Length: 289
Image (cartoon, rainbow, N blue to C red):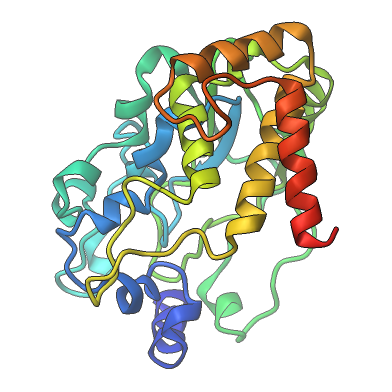
């Protein structure tokens, strides 16, 4: 298991620089803690309102695709792995809130999976190549435009590689797959008015006010600080709201309506494009910009 071993060895020396393993030094080793749920994207799926296209691989040794969906199981050969090795999502996820797949949270009507077979010309990463005993394969398959369904907010391309092998990284094979069509479409698409929801606006205002809810606790019992630069957080929050509201009159009215119905009022009982412009100007002056 050379890749997992390499990550573990680095974690011993530079714990805070290694994703996931480094988190043990920050959030502690109690895997029942809510901190592990609160740092996961599934804890704020309701704040993600834009179209999403991601890729996962059944042969991913480091990030099992079973945390995204329980479909498409690809059982490992236990004879190839150390005795006692486990990768079962349900049994390894000790925090009950986190023991839900992305598909369970998003809902079946809002997500689509695209299972991709191995294309012609693809190469498998061998153990010898991974550990430097043989050259990496040259060439590879033609690029695949990552498939997606415009009627679903969430699209997941799944590389069907079979089960992971002990030496695997994030993929077993040398895929060439890019989101060109998806990106080109949404670069030109108009900004939907309903992209701003009450929960999303509330989170933006939490950032502006420096009052984040659902903050994970650190290993020492202190709350994690996700607002290291308060003035820049304020500026970013206001700029985002202003960009949205300036898109059209419908966007400005929607923001004003959602803001008026919300409980956080940092800009007064009501807000408008003009008020947001004035707030932004004051912030820029305070920053010396």
